[in-house]
Image 1 (tube, rainbow, N blue to C red):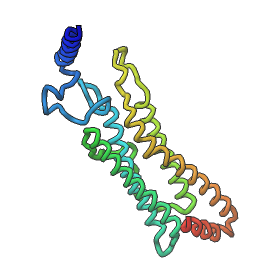
Image 2: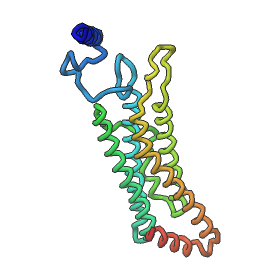
Image 3: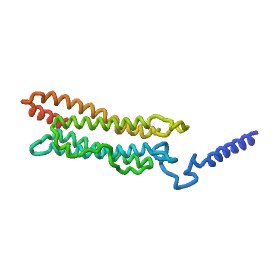
Image 4: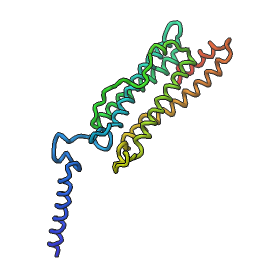
Length: 231
């Protein structure tokens, strides 16, 4: 009796294995060594479909690099002999360094998922020169708007890949779905952005209050710069 059960079990496993073996798409790596890669889910193009996750993250990494240069140039604008604001310089230098680090880590993540994280022309790239002609309050407003634009873009990518979507009535509900990439954005990009946006919004309102009186605006800017330098 036990011998018959063992034989039946072995035959069942063989039949299951044979069923998967006949379906090359179930595990292409078992058939062709060149098909073995870290690619899975909907991160990269497959069967002629657009690699939405890969392309979106590649675009976002490029926007982070663009942001890093914007804030680096803006920080240098507050390190001139006619406008020496070490607090503002520190604030924007920190933002520049963080954007650069985020871009590097995002490129590494793309590589981990089997992609090649090269940079592309970012959407809505602006002229760097405009950030050299801003005062203290205007620079904070520019920084806040920039951070909110980046956050909205991150949210748009997250929304696209966090839920399964049907593709034109097909049975493929994982066309855009990639929870691993969504989790990466949550922990490394989105959570940090909400705190930065809150801080910058507070800085804008506080500095505007300090500099409401034209006669005291220079003193207000000086005191606020000292606060930023110690923050």
